[in-house]
Amino acid sequence: MKIDLHNHSYYSDGVLSPAEVVDLAKNQGCDVFALTDHDTTDGLVEAQQQADEINLQLIHGVEVSAMWNNMTIHIVGLNVDIENKTLQAGLKQHQEFRQIRAEKIARGLGGVGIFNALEKVKLVAKTPMITRTHFAQMLVQEGVCKDMRSVFKRFLTGKKPGGVGGKWAEFDEVISWIHAAGGKAVLAHPLRYRMTNTKIKRLLSHLSGAGLDGVEVVTGSSSSDEITLVSQWAKEFDLSASIGSDYHGWPNQRVQIGHLQDMPNVNKTIWSDWSWLN
Ligand code: AMP
Ligand code: MN
Ligand code: MN
Ligand code: MN
Image: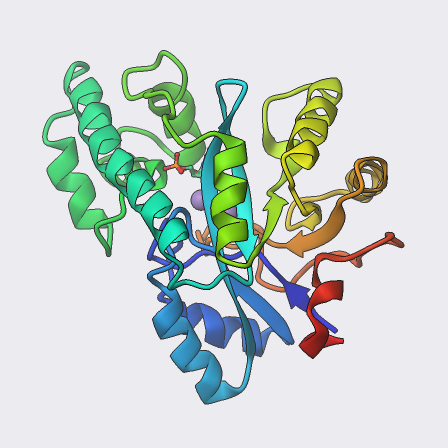
């Protein structure tokens, strides 16, 4: 069975519409697929319509930004009730922070001579959700940087002109929103944070203590060694293993929907409790 539980549409920073992402997943042979946009579930209505149309098993997901130890991490909620008030109130806070942050980023860029960044970035985004990826796309279009990676490096991180610290909810609160909505909370791409392995293990230990259900063992950019390492951590911290490509659809991204290495032998997968699947 082909499963991909981490993907984006243009409701956050992906390129394709929810219906297009669902079509692509089906064409790539996915049997089970989750749409997990950043801090919003708004794309799932369209995604579900298309999934019903073409008979694809769609998991309702969301990738929630969170703070741990003053650092931003991403927690994926899977199989959430998108009507849940606690979850939606939390996501609304994050959506509001994104508006304020976008204004701050634009002001920072104005300080180094990049004017009208907010107006320009709104033209790039297809929904009101503004992510840093949209700023990166805009600055590449404007010819300021050659690719998105260099925009992040030069402008959008740390003390750089458009660097604005995250003010997301704390990890334990985010986990509780996901649980309130009946979902499973999974730490996304554990090896993509700028942390030593010792620190990632501390992160996993804290999150596991706060009720985290799983961790992404296989991602679109994992090497075999990384998969082995994270599967050992999953065992050590009693976490279920998840799998997801983190597909965004950027032309220069090598990540493709449903193109994932096999899940190694693990104690438990995140979908083992989804009785309708097994
Ligand atoms: P945001 O949630 O608005 O802070 O944006 C974070 C998103 O930016 C991530 O989900 C990635 O898709 C993207 N991103 C972060 N760092 C980089 C990078 N160095 N190069 C390209 N994209 C990045
Ligand atoms: Mn993203
Ligand atoms: Mn992420
Ligand atoms: Mn993602």
